[in-house]
Length: 413
Image 1 (cartoon, rainbow, N blue to C red):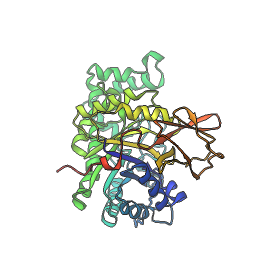
Image 2 (image 1 turned 180 degrees about the vertical axis):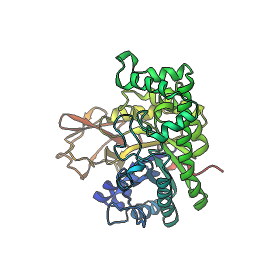
Image 3 (image 1 turned 60 degrees about the horizontal axis):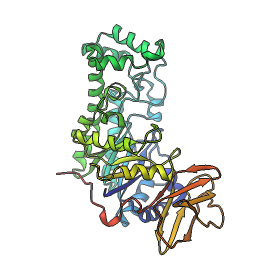
Image 4 (image 1 turned 60 degrees about the vertical axis):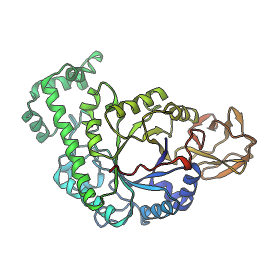
């Protein structure tokens, strides 16, 4: 697995600086950084003449400079269909909830004004910054209970859906149904219900068109740029009814739209194990999608669970892994006969186990601190604790990922 990526928030760079952040990433063997360039708030981390900025510093520029000096690729990560700033200015653009109306910062995938707005922001980034990739997130419906304004309902009906019948299924599934009816509308799709199938087709086309409208102008601007997307893992299952209705996000469509996808196979968030992570990778491969597997490296994960997920992918049809996220797990690497540790968390790391044995830490590793201990042998795994709570940790090199083995995931010809 040649690619080792990390998703990176601006706050992490603001706290440590781009140079120190990238130095640690290189020590960890990171090849690709997916840097959050526009978040849910709609604020951006670069010098934009269109969108509001989240900070005065040009963090995208800082990350690009530090990364390219060290041979690391940078993908500008955009949360595409969620924008609190734009929604506040244009309430009519909101995505409508089945009951609550246009709440949250979600934007309708069919809103032409927002499409023009986000295309302009993407063009800015592609024209003015030497980014290696464009990474799209939230490029889907978030839940079946969203996408219910009058125009949405008319489009479902025009595609052949009996909306009185669909609403009855929605009510049974989400509002008034008994517990054994919680899968009612999904079972209807599995059974071939024509109205539900029509609605699913419309939602899938909404996502597909939204993605195309963002990608085509960027391709025209930068032909060699790599376009990737973060996808929900359910669409890689054999049974795609859940993904088809909730997200409108298809792995078959992704194989055509993107150069690579990052399934968010966060095992602990789903109560799963490494075997499940591998099944997601294999399911995506069956749909001819190039993948870098997104893994659970944040609260709820541990050094042990993360390593199990990585090792489960040995020999799997994937081009590497990406950890969510830098700043949420303890970093560890071996250098000069010593094991180095960096604590990016908000709590002190009070104990670290290497192959089950306590490391001789002289004092708790405080937030933002880096320290090292001598070791006679390279450990196979580490586990980190803040008092009695185990936190996530990643030990570079224990998974077979090395800089020498890294290969490019540049766009296929």
